Amino acid sequence: MPSILITGANRGIGLEFVKQYAADGWKVYACCRNPQAASDLNALEGDITVHALDVSDLAAIYALAEKIDAPLNVVIANAGVGSWNIPGFGDMDYDAWKRVMDVNLYGAVATCEAFAPHAIKAKGRIAAMTSEMGSIADASSGAIPYRTSKAALNMAVQVIAPELAPKDVAIATFHPGWVKTDMGGPHARITAEQSVSGLRQRFEEMRPTSSPKFLAYDGREIPW
Ligand SMILES: NC(=O)c1ccc[n+]([C@@H]2O[C@H](COP(=O)([O-])OP(=O)(O)OC[C@H]3O[C@@H](n4cnc5c(N)ncnc54)[C@H](OP(=O)(O)O)[C@@H]3O)[C@@H](O)[C@H]2O)c1
Image 1 (tube, helix red, strand yellow):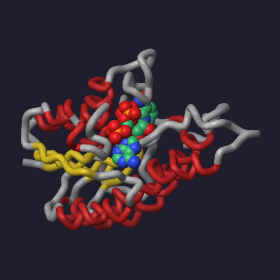
Image 2: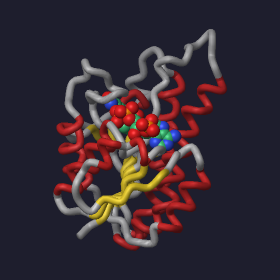
Image 3: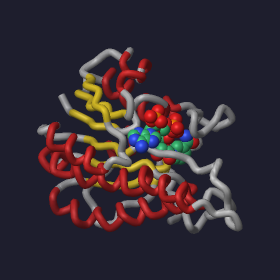
């Protein structure tokens, strides 16, 4: 059966990825910061192995990649943090901004890099969860740390894509929609189930290319 690795797999969109792929019989490597406390994840049935991983610990990402010596059909750099509670322009908190970058940018790029050899073995796909809030063309006010982390991740992936395309690996960033999770809040437009169902279709459509588009879960193209 095909295999998939997901970061931030204990709740929200990441948990839903585990649920849907495991239900379809995939082998799932589910990564989360605190496996012991991941009760929803541990309750899921299927071929799931849970791995402790804090993506702000870059060395831990590469160590896990050494341990998981298997081809991966899909890798999802999903773990992320918001920045709604960090003060804005005029009162910037640079330490807090750096912590957002550690997870959303460096942690995500390291996930792509560490598991690229596994994706190459499977001629697989790598997906990074960014956000339309990272679109410069559509920028509006607030959330500078979050927006810059996602815009930078979009850029990093566009640079990585032409390096992986000749190795038959597709990589792209995706906007999952405004999703009812802890991050998206209860007033969000769609459920995690709707988001992940759409994203899985988008992943199926991915092909190795040197200039991937920035797509939302429903196939809508988002301006950079
Ligand atoms: N929900 C939305 O509307 C929306 C919209 C656009 C983009 N996104 C993106 O989609 C992705 C998933 O979002 P979500 O809505 O599912 O968010 P969520 O419900 O807040 O879940 C975030 C996940 O990331 C994990 N995480 C945070 N920091 C981590 C770290 N240092 N190491 C490992 N895991 C870490 C969390 O684990 P803990 O439980 O340990 O904190 C949790 O599993 C994120 O990248 C987010 O930016 C979401």
